[in-house]
Amino acid sequence: MLTIHHLSVDFEVGGDDTAVFARLFAEHIREWSQRQEGARARGRLLAREASLVGEEAGHDPSAGHAPAPGCCGGV
Image (cartoon, rainbow, N blue to C red; front, side, top):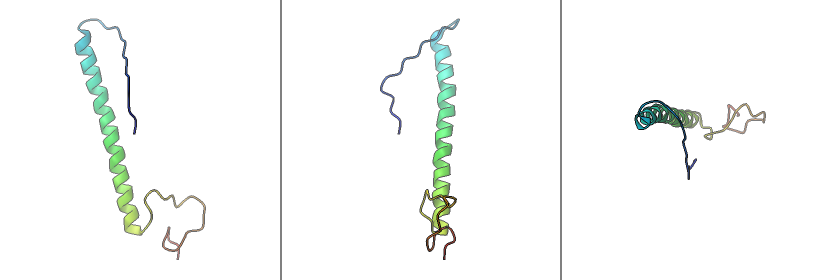
């Protein structure tokens, strides 16, 4: 998890600085949020798939070791 303790933003624009900042911030925070949700959804999907085949979540079958019984198709 990432925690931001201090954030400083400096920019120069013509017109209403507050409105421009609010618009840009909303666009970028929406994109960030969508990426975060996508990552969580992929994690849930991988965990679900791993549980269906009896693998530990996060296990990489291409790691190059001999599969243990019940793991990665090991007998």
